[in-house]
Length: 385
Image 1 (cartoon, rainbow, N blue to C red):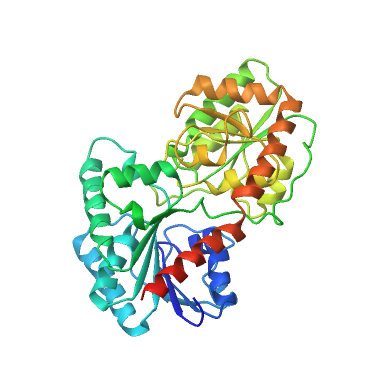
Image 2: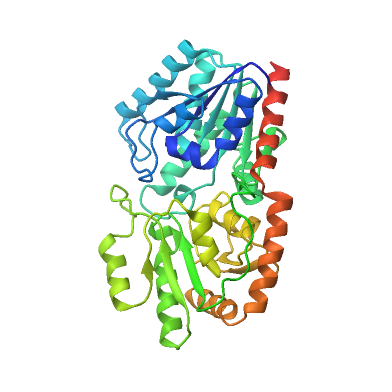
């Protein structure tokens, strides 16, 4: 794919920068005209992010009215029509949709406007496929129906980030496995996250994540409390910012209370993750969320850090149990506590797991490899045009 017009559509522009920038840069380096469509009024974005960054990379930004959480039919219709207008005016050769609403509405818009090629990237099944009760089953059914409609484009391809999601979506007939590829997450810059030796001293366990309950924040705090009560000498730190607009966000006062009790530290949002990981001994992610492949686990592996994570799709792609870290049943606080204690008390095992984690990152998760695989899909679709 050379000299083509490529449009990425996502529900947050910062997500493109944090998770798909290498792909955009690879397309630009190949001579393609790269455009990004996303909301201009972010529900949440890191304080160090600005839409201006997209222009600095040589991309053209197009604001669209899209709300991740809206269920208002009029607002949803406005999103669809905005995409139709954009596709008609821009006339992209290929559109790459990321996350649920861009896939659903963008695929419809692409069919309505005759976009030649479409890539739909499922970045994880998210809370929609995990939640029980309430309107969750209805919304899940609607999403599956939408995916089925999306696959109807005559020249579309689906990317998923782990084999578990591929199986779930295939079983639901939401995707065609013959036109789908597993691309292992967003990849990691191996040079930006160099391996470093175990820092020594009091072990530091960090949990970097979006601070929503489904990421396992409560389970992490409970494990820290239990280990400290047992006299284990370790520090525990949450790394991430608050999301006041998200009803599932952990309130700031809760984290402040944990700090006051001496259970854990809250380091807030950090833009220097290589430095954070160089100070850490263990990375923890006890998520129950429908993960794709968590970027932090790839960054931890590249940095040579062992991880303790939930045994769920996505996490088990990035953490190989008994080789690069430990996996525990999601929501099992006792198992998480035991796994953390094992690594806190065994520096040699941490070193072994960390070294093997770096080798795994080099073999499977470099951002260069992810970009190459994505560009291969682009070329395949454009050749079929």
